[in-house]
Length: 127
Image (cartoon, rainbow, N blue to C red):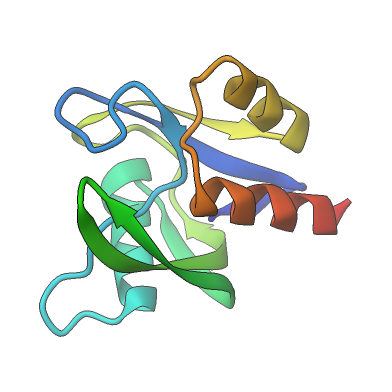
């Protein structure tokens, strides 16, 4: 997750995405021989147009999406260059405080599960 001023950068996923029509944080599957940290850096650039520096791993977990099991890794990162803008397949990007994320969650517009729990927990720790 990309953090700035106690806010997290969210993306709104477009048509064909696993989380189509939902807000999430930039992320995705690792390529062959790509580390989870390198994947997070690449996905931030592809989905939000920014180059990030990872500060630390926040959490990792085992999860299942559409019947496929995989490990999720959540990193705290900061932008080192670029201005957030939607990449291919992304409808919008925006900065959000915890209260905005909780409102999106209530409206069914936010991803669910372990990733959301990790994002909310980390934002609470920054308060």
